[in-house]
Amino acid sequence: METIIKKINREKLKKEDFAEAVDILRSGGLVAFPTETVYGLGGNALDKSASAKIYAAKGRPSDNPLIVHIADKDALSGLAEEIPLMAWECAKYFWPGPLTMILKKKPVVPDSTTGGLPTVAIRMPSDAVARMLIAESGLYIAAPSANASGRPSTTRAEHVYKDLAGRIGLILDGGETTIGLESTILDLSGEKPVILRPGYLSREDLLPILPDVEYDPAVIAKTMQKDIVAKAPGMKYRHYAPKGNLTIYEGEQKAVVAAVNRAVEEKMGEGYTCAVLATEETKGAYTCPVVKSIGGRAQEEIIAARLFDVLRSFDDGGVEYIFSESFPDGNLGPAIMNRLLKAAGYQVIYVGAE
Image 1: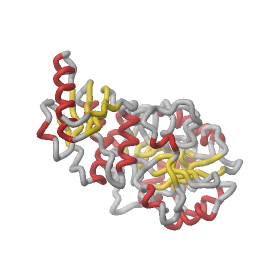
Image 2 (image 1 turned 180 degrees about the vertical axis):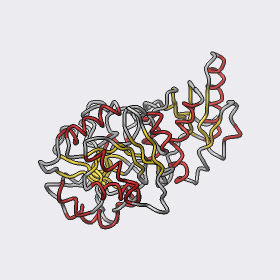
Image 3 (image 1 turned 135 degrees about the vertical axis):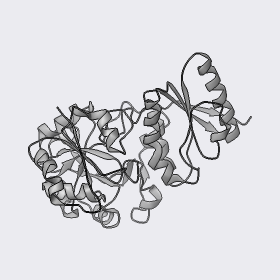
Image 4 (image 1 turned 90 degrees about the vertical axis):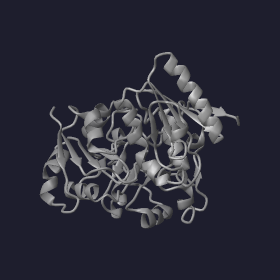
């Protein structure tokens, strides 16, 4: 299968720009497209065969549920069996935007889309290209991140092409995504609201609307959670991983730099290629030949937006061992660390003061 990249002019969105993508989706095929978070791999959410194609194209485990994207808040009623008041309140304040809500599903939503679960994950993206594609198609679009399963998510069309060329027919190129981290996933199917995946919207952002919202224990765990039912994407399996071995170092800054420099010296002495994921404040302190700054420590939104792009750049350089600083602080800290921990397979080294 030939994979075509179609450039979209965001300044002048036209219906005809989406005609080919709409035809593909309506005929049960797949289209990759940008959202404000990452690129998504879309198919008709109510078509069992389309969902199966998504899993096959990504190499994704079939018990890992897909997120259904909508273009209108009222579409909630077409997908969810029970919609509590708090869901409508969240839709009012946070949609369109990077919030996914999990609700009890209607029978019309096939089990193949929900990973066999009785719930469905729903999101209304704010990205203009995504919204127009959904609206023009007249469909609910199931769309996980447009990457090979387990790899860093895609924030550029060229990332999608590297992972999925030959597996899908069309990529809508809307440029680089703005947020760079997937949506916050909020479970509203039970008595209390629970965050199943941290994202751009933090717990603090949700508290004014949901004063009793908490993180699921699996989200804040420091080890891989294997024996759980994955109610949301990213809960159960290793995700976001570069090809090289990634280890996170956590502790006092000077001690982290010293420990990483020792590890780099050891691995390079054994003949391996190494790289360091650092910040503007520390990039000059490392002895490794390859040091990538992800931004200043106070620039959380820049760190979030660049994370997957930098991880993919290590693959382009054939890096075999990657050593990363930790980023636990700030509003986006939980989301950034959630992605890094999964990318590293929870390999964390805690270092004391030197």
